[in-house]
Image 1: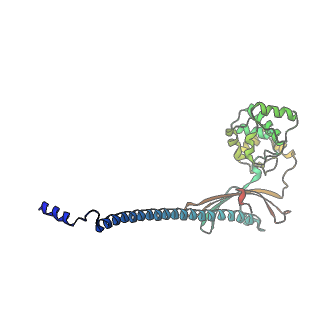
Image 2: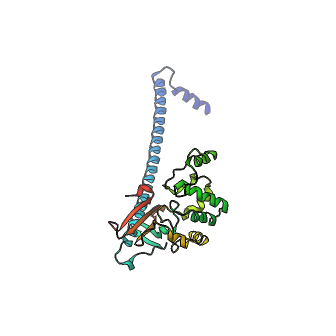
Image 3: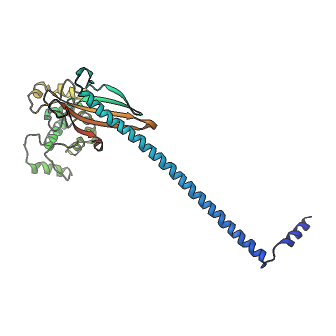
Length: 294
């Protein structure tokens, strides 16, 4: 039986060189080209589909993040309008209490804190800076030396050494810059002060501000600042310092944390000065992030 099948197959096999044999070979080659073309097209379609899904996902994330950022920004101005309410009993307390708002599809937590409760390194006395460094973990000698260095950096310390002597001290420590002798533009700039370490800066940073008065308010100071004030008995010294904030002016730090759909999250913070003598009753002094400022 097998022999008969082989003989039958041999009988119908195209003879080499015949037109039917040539057609069979060209048809097989064309089929291979078609198959590879289909594979290539399928690969391209798969790649485009995957890229499209990724771009849609990215676009969706951008949308929900933008919504959360807008909600946080709106909460900042909601707090400002609340603090300018003519009815004082309707205003929020400036004590760090969390206030919950719903803006669009986002839930926002807003906190108001007195900016005078922190220490301003641009204008604070050396004894206050030294006390802050001590209560946050620095040894007395390093605290004293660093408090003097900060005063020299911002230009608030009494001139006891020439600029060349100070510059030589920085160069001897391997630093290729000198002292600006002017106010800090950011708190992070303190990291460039001679003797300041990342650990020391991280310890004092939460208790500093660039917008507060020379002497912090003991009534609203955070526990660390309050400890620094108590340690050096600053009650009389603070009262004697000039350039204090007028009594009818308050400086408020407003922080808004927004939670939106799809786990979107955004934070906005603003330093706002309130006072009857201001044109609109308030003035925004600074925002974080800066690009959120309007």
